[in-house]
Image (cartoon, rainbow over all chains, first blue to last red; front, side):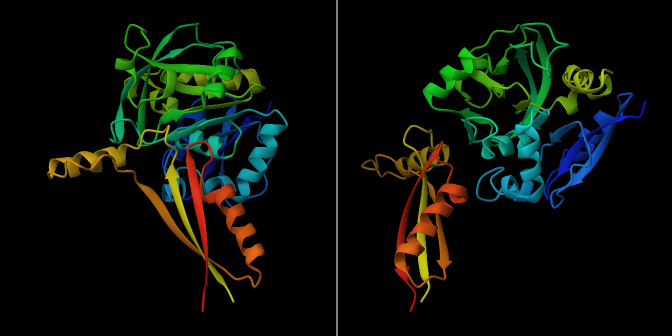
Length: 234
Length: 84
C-alpha cells in the first residue's frame, strides 16, 4: 500500500517545519509533504500540520497574517470538511486567528520568551490525537514561545470544559495542575484544545521536539502516532 | 482625495498587559508616585484611496475587525483624516 501523505505547511518564518518533517518521516507508512504558503493545492494529503516558528515574523500578532495566506484558505476548507489539522505553537496561534479554534494567545504572564521543558497532562484521551495516551498521563514535552498565554472569555472556557475540548493542561511532574505549574499564565493551565468536531487540535508544547529518546523525551511521539493510526491505520 | 485612517489597537481591560505593567513599575521607580497605570498598544496609519468618507470609514472598520485587531483580546479606535 502506498504511503499516506501528511502536509506540513511552510510559512516564511516557520522554523519547526523540518523538525516536524523529520518526526513524521520516522513513521512507517507515512510520508511528509511540505506545502509552501503560496500554494492552493493540498495534493491529496490526509492530514495537515501547521508547525512552530514565527510566520511572517509574528508581525501585527502571532499567526494573524498567516491566516490570510493562500494555503490557509485551503486548510480552513479542509478542516471544515472534517480532515485532521494539528497546530503546534505558532500553528496553534494560526488556528486561533483562523477561528478554527476559539480564544487567543497573548504575551506570557512574566513577559519572558520561554524555551524550556514542561510537563503537561493529557486530560482527554478520546480524541484522534490522543488515543494512545492514557487519561491523566503526564508528558514531558518542551515549550518555546513568547505568546502562549491562552485566553478566552469565561463563557467560552465553560463551553470548552463542558464539551471536553481541553486536551492538555500544564502540570507539575506529579501531575498536579496548579498556578505554580503554569508557565505562561494560561487560563486554567490550558496547553492545548480541540474543536467541537474533534478534528482540529492546537497546542503550545512541541510534540515533534519530544519524539525520540535522543531528544530527552519521546512523550510527544504518541500524539503523532495516534493521528497516523487514525488516518492510515499504521 | 485619500483619507488617512489613524488606528489605535489596545488590549482589553480584562487582559493583563505585561508590557504596560513593566513600564508602570519603571515609572514608579523613577519617582513618579502619581502614575497609576500604563497600558501599551499599537498605532497604525493606513491610507485609503476613497473619495467618499463613509466608504473610507466602512473600509477602515472592516480592516480593523478582519486583520488589524483581534476582538477576542483587543479593542480598536479609528479616526479618519483627509489627506491634502
